[in-house]
Image 1 (cartoon, rainbow over the protein chains, first blue to last red):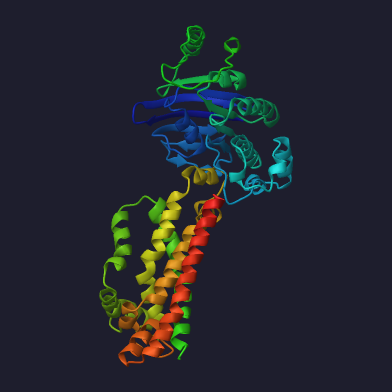
Image 2: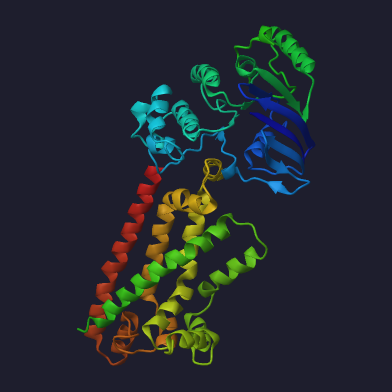
Length: 246
Length: 221
């Protein structure tokens, strides 16, 4: 199972132009500053945005081919997409949210117990915390048995402790799922902790990894100097950076 | 007192509300979330009955629903009977007259729905129709209820447009508002007063219901 993407899309400030692939068992982390085009890439993979030109394939299936006029809608891609702002359905309780698109109802309880949200099953979405919502969103997507899992800054709105716990859970999950997982973040420590492969994106282009390493070394220096800005912007990042893992 | 006009009004309001909610929901959805050419023109056309005197709307409806009008001829071809001065005729007239009162609250409710929730539904495999039925409608209950209540109240209160299209045929088109007018004209003030008095608690209880639904919906979300 391999997901391949080679697309171009004109964005308001620059042209997004990327080509990469992600194979089964791999967790690829797309990392870059805010506004670099990361979310646009993941939305194109999900079928929520269309590229101006290019192709996206999954194994032998073509999801997008602008030359041939092929565009497979998100409904038919059978993938999981965990959004940044965990858009669960407020009219349903947690269990019904998880079971919303489940292929097999029996996996719902198992998943909810695995992510420690079974005790919240009867609560409405508005009555649970951000971390619990994100766990529910992950379960909701996994219950669909996705062929690819896309995670768009899923931990950015969470507190540091919940973020760490969820990262560990995603890491464990990766070993169990055996599907391509693409994770978008602007958090270096998250990227280094989770990713099998890192894909640094700046202004819509993949930048060489040495730039990221240079930036990390620069960050290490900057942090010692009391400057906390890796991308030259006022981006937030986590404080448990692991430069050595790059 | 003759209760028939009141029962006829309630029947007319119930039928119109039921039909209008079903017909207006997809239209409100298209106006709220759709992107198509001429959207602003269509919306203005739908809202036109609010900007026109009911007698003006009634006059044009009488023309198009009459035996020489396209709608009247079409109706006659299908059913073999005329459309004007019938119960069915005043239902059709009310559907057009009350359309903006159904569209506006529904459109506002649909516009409030988080787009990422819809995208999440698409990614989870739901078609646009299934998303509409399983996500949009349940999350727009307050808007739908508001639309139903507004349509119901306006249907009971409608006068000019019904008089033009339906006249005043007892048991067929003589609704309570027309009966009140005729009672006053014939100086039957006691009868007119009683009918007016009955309408006040009906209107008040529906507005109270609307407030309760809105409050519950806020607490829910």
